[in-house]
Image (cartoon, rainbow, N blue to C red; front, side):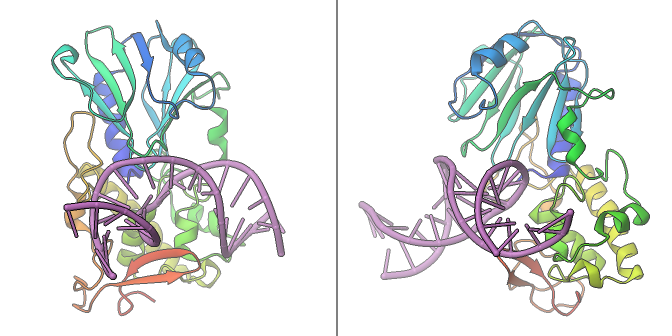
Length: 279
DNA sequence: AGCATCACCTGGCTGC
DNA sequence: TGCAGCCAGGTGATGC
């Protein structure tokens, strides 16, 4: 499922394929993708506009336009953005909900079987060109950096389980279930630990693990699970799944100690971890 | 305010 | 083989 590394990989694809291009025609065919405004309104605010930048905060993509507005795209669980070089020769696949023609004859297509993904255009824009509603997010570890001091501030006064904190976009932006589990494993802290009980050394280990796991995952183009749902803009798979230490590996040996990885439940959550390495 | 829980949605998998 | 039931999981609403 697209988390920060996957969305960052898509952002880099958009930078190459879409930035500097004009949207000549936009078709919305799905019923649920555009729900913040009417599809007709979204189309009217996109057609003829030049895409000036490709930005990202957390799992959200933001494409500032020459109108001063911003196109926001969220892939949610199953959304894919695909850049099609020869649209006349490549029929849209099933579950294609938005098609945007670019002024170089290529197309940007949005495919989303589970229809959770979303497109909208907003004119409530900050001086940095991102939507005002992005103010609610915590720091993005890749776009803005996150040191241990900032992490400690973000966790201050909270008692929730660590995985709940890591996946709370107001605390840190961009981490979902897969990377939260991998970060906890690398930092050797259990995902169900209450954040109020973390030692200074554990906070340092977590800050380092957040940086290294996300940086390496971005370097490898994100994780594509066996359902092959996540691909980048040109249809390539990510390869970070080969580095997963715990996620989806219940019963398989922990790379560090050889004991079986467990799939644990706490509250309504699930996490993969090694009870021997993580405390 | 902070935290837990639930609804949303549908393709695909599991198990009978 | 068919099908019911469940799971995936980020986000926002709700309730405590």
